[in-house]
Length: 242
Length: 218
Image (tube, rainbow over the protein chains, first blue to last red):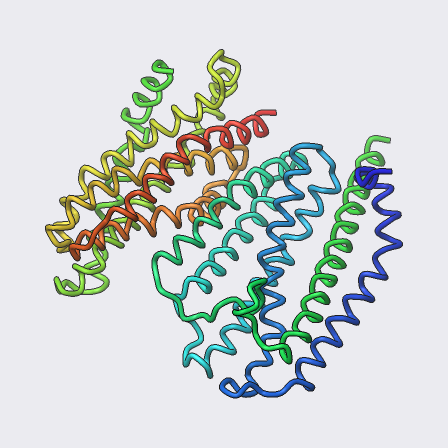
């Protein structure tokens, strides 16, 4: 029994059909309870007031915006090395979700930034590199939709994803080099000194787990859609031949 | 390899090759900027490094889509691919040709345009050095983008969407070198990073370019 068995589209469909409702359930439960806990049952910050609560949307979406790209990188590598179609389709399915998460992170940041920093936008390294990440997502999605031959599209986007990863990371450091930041340090890091206090931290972790489950559920759903669309195409092609 | 290089250079320089088009674009951009923002030296001087780098970036972009497209159209790309020269070598030569016909001339005329934009004279040398070190990265990255989109009918718009984000680190460090040079600050760090990006691109990107070409020729 190895995980590669689920690279078979039929097995994957069977497994994902069984798993999907559970993932959705966990996603709705965790992100719902985390958000409610965070919004209504946490104290206001002594400096930021109620506006601190947007952290429960901002941090999880930013976290996913970055990690969706890494998931695409892993899926692209699996496609390039082992040529499993499910993997290529999962990478394709994750890209728009990552783009939306990037947009949500930027938007909630802007909404929070206006009362706190006095500006919606600042050319801060973190903000800039997020905008650049959004551009990378756009290019990736555009390349997928531009190429008709699906296997060629999967290959080319995988190569782009590999090269793009290197340059997205480079851009991150270039932006840091280029301008000093306004953004606060990490909200969640293993280095406990930097962490925010426990009152805010616990609901945040719950929301974060909920968002990860939501991401998984969305990727599963979109991958299943892509697989079904491919089946439809091949069925239609067969019907035309007959 | 030399034969391919000479052939591509000849094709680029002779009529219809688009050589000089990038240069003309660079010149026009340097003319349009003062018209748009005003002719005061105090205004133009500080932004001149950025404008010149941006101009170089866009001028490079203009000629990218013909790197492989013409060869694919008349079938010579298939011939080149089946030749004993590995595709990685072809990718390197194509990028080198692109640099010789755009990046190098841009570097040479950049000081003159710097004069037009009131670039401080102390920064002119740094501008030339930064462009000389940085523009190869633009050509190599552009060749990679061209290889990704070679099979597409209307690829050039997509090409700019793919390639411009990849240009960001080069742009940041390149403009930083000139800005620091203009202010008399030490330039070694951004210069080293710029050189690192260029060398990394030259060393590794031909493999990605060749892989993309193989997919598109399949």
